[in-house]
Image (cartoon, rainbow over all chains, first blue to last red; front, side, top):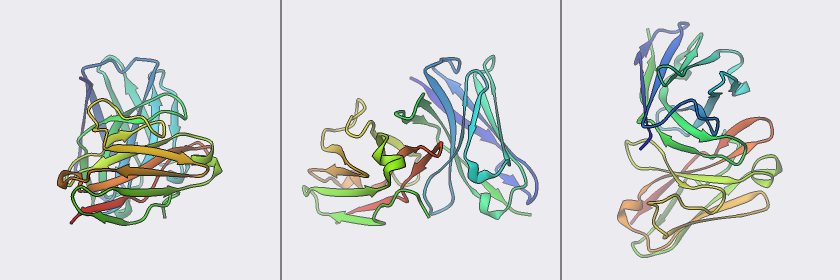
Length: 121
Length: 109
């Protein structure tokens, strides 16, 4: 059964870069049938898709993040990563990684358990 | 402000049927399929319905989805206490983003 697990710093200072890694087990991150995404949820609020990455390294970002986001994938480690620069308190959220099927008819499944990241000095 | 519009809350008594609406536009729900996610308190979202009306294995058939035009609905029949959760709709938008609804908090009275 495919499982995803987020890891990274739970506390980031304002203006610094948030870095998270998603480790995938029970399946290969190299499958061409899937992409690997990040979604966040501010405390008490709804879900926001941040971006996705294909096994080839091709990326797709939410334009609202205005160039602050970068993603990478390491197929040898079965991991993909997220970096969000110039963070502010508004970036405080639970960050989830998830797999989704390729294409506009896809869906996110499964999800990692989530990692709370707090932006504070 | 979410791209897809959901009522912030819904409620029902055990055994009742409840529906949750999700309104969008042609660029998202109108042209693409809708997925629904259930988020139990303190847990990650899980896929409940995909491709408008398909249940993944393990999801009870009490849950069903439908889509018409630029709107979609999630129906829960035979409401149970364990259905108390937040429910989110989602769809691809042709502006090249995945969009979500703001979520509906379902209370079982």
